[in-house]
Length: 516
Image 1 (cartoon, rainbow, N blue to C red):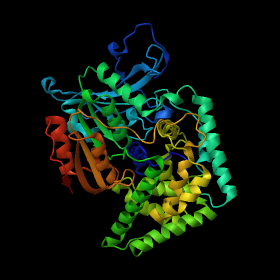
Image 2: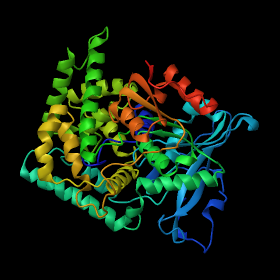
Image 3: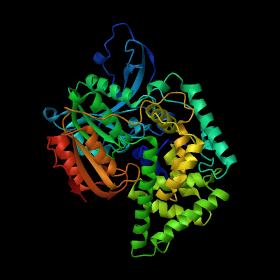
Image 4: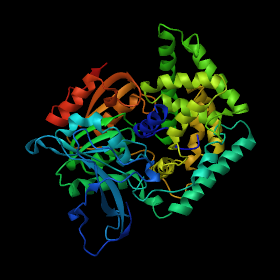
């Protein structure tokens, strides 16, 4: 696929955008000599409206108790190997703790995933979901370096991105393969042209060091942390680098830290296929007729036929754009991030079978960070930049072609889409750091690691592998037998009780706890 190197999407960010559609300052500079960045004082003010790179829209609404969301900018070294050199500004947001001052634990820092998702926009969109945690913590999130207001990576403009996302990301012949490779090279060259200075500085290890500076600037002895999706990888890297500074931490929707980019893409092909299987079974199991198929196999066969038809002839989408095979596949994938979206997937498929691609295109736009005004956040640019800076492997067209049978065995619908996504880092101007992240964290306190058996984007097996990689006595695994990307925001009482018990009261749940 042409946007993120894998579907490690910031699902909560996209969820906020897609629901609104379907249901309805950071500068750099030079550091003064001998300036101690850990001693900086943050100037918290009412939050402005999100920037275009953050996704646009209105300033966050007041909290239910009337308190305002507050925003600030934290200075950090551009290059952590040269802490006396240039600095960048990292955008932060917070909601002050709502409970009694003598019960406050500290700050709880969130990263919602991506990589490339804006925490400054996502936290207020879902702030009420964390009201219980706010009783004892200041809720804090941020735009990681390269994201949103934090020196955002810039590549193509909005008009160019519209064309980019219309391309055929699952080529069938040499001409289409050549076009895909050329478009990928043009995208990567644009990133280098517009963001050359920041591209080598957006690795996950850089973001982890930023979080330790953030911990100190916020005045916390330990980093209390809630990481979701890619946020679990970031949390694992932080624990590896600063095990002695880890406080109470929760990893939800866990990235498998043992996999290469190829293994991750193949795992996601299997994960999204499992989610599609579950969607189809759910649809035909209802008392009324399933409007998109008579049996689960029929539902999936009709989807596969639709995609082949769109490959030959797109249908009208969101005017003036057409719904292509690529856009439809992305829209289907987006709808599988949450069971709450399954009704929109059903509606979108019904419309598409009748020649109307609007709903599937709105879902695809959410995945790609496009709002109703045609403006794109920088989630795609940041996602590619961070993944390519992190991941050492580089794949070419011939390699992907050789892997297609394996990916197609994993998923008829998503196999080609995810196999060809491995080209995203080909000819990237910055070398990747490693085959996979190091998250070993001997000496760190317990970290609650939650895996969801029906998770499409971060398959369940990754939670167990994260526990093993963190090391003996660190990772504590909890299993949620459910659907969608992540567990806490499913509202499952068992999961939330376990998270609240640990983060609020320090009670570590028993290892291998199962919630259903």
